[in-house]
Length: 388
Image (cartoon, rainbow, N blue to C red; front, side, top):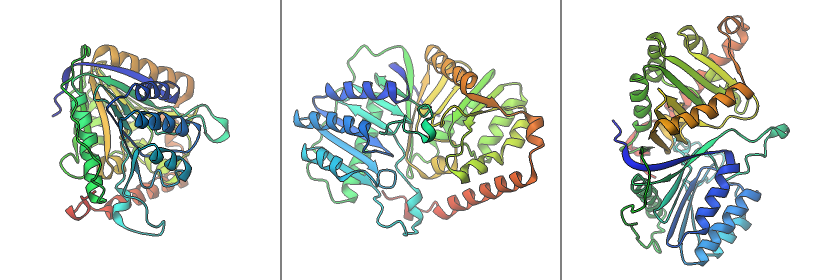
C-alpha cells in the first residue's frame, strides 16, 4: 500500500508545448545539481534546446547527470553528446546496445522512466521523452501525452530514486569517479495541500509497486475509473479488477491507442476488447494523433501520471516511474483534459460492431497476444537478470 505524503504542489503539463518550456526554465535556474532520465533523447531541435540548457547549467558549476536508455536513445547524435560532455555534463547509457543481433533476454529490461530533478526543489515526472512531439507521420497533431511539475516533500523520494539509479549504473560501468555526493536539505518551500506519492517499478524491491497502486485504487473505486494508456495489455489480475469494478456498477472508461504505431501491440491489445466490452467497460480509441499518455483518474480524487504503460513490458520488465496524486482539484483538471480529448479526437468502440468484426482480425489479435506473452516469458524473472 502506498503512503502519499501531504504538503505537495503538483501542476499538470500537457504535451511538449507545456513541458519543455517549464523544464528549460527550471534548468536555467539550477545552481547545484540536475538529474535527467529519459528513454528517448532525440537530436532534433527540442533535444538541442534541452542540451544547451543542460550545458549552460554545467558551465555555471552545477553537477549535471543525464541517464538515457541504451536502446531508446541509441541513435543520439555524436555532436549533441559532444556538446554535453564538452560542457562537463555526465552522460551515461542504461544497458547500452552492443549489437542489434544480440538475442539476450535482458534486452527487454529497459529504462523507461522520464523524469528530472533540479536542485532538490522541483521535479518533473511523466511520459514525455526528450523529442519534438510534433514530428508525427502525415503531419498529425502532436503526440498526446502528459507530465507533472512537482514541489514538496515527495521530492525527497524522487531525488533518492534518481541518485540511486545513477550510482548503480555508474558502478556497473566502473564510472564512479566524479560523483560528488550532495543531499538536498529537507524541503523548506510552501509546497501545497496535495497528497502525493512517487511510485517506481524496478527488477529488485519494487517489481509490483505501480501495478499494486493501480489495483488498490481500482479495488476501492465506487463511481468512476478513467484510464488513458498508449499500450494496454493488462495481465489477468488487472483485467479482473476492471471487470469486477464494472460489474459492481462503477463506470469504467478506457482511452486507448487508435492508430497503428506498433503492429504487434496494436493487434494484441484488441484481443482483450471482447471480454471488457461484455462486462460494460467503455472503450474509446484515440485517432486525432498518436496517444502516448499513461494516466488515470479514479473517483474524482485519485490520479496518476507517469511513464508506465499497462502492458507486460512496463509492469514486468522495464524501470518505470509514476506520481500518484490524491487531490480533487488535480483530478478534475486531468479528467477535464481527458474528456476533451475523447470528445475531440476519439471514437467509442461499440460492442455490437465489435462482435461483427471479421474472424481473421480475431485471429491476428490472439496471435499477437500470444507472441507478446511469449516474449515476456523469454525475458525471465530470475535474479540473474536483476543487475543493472
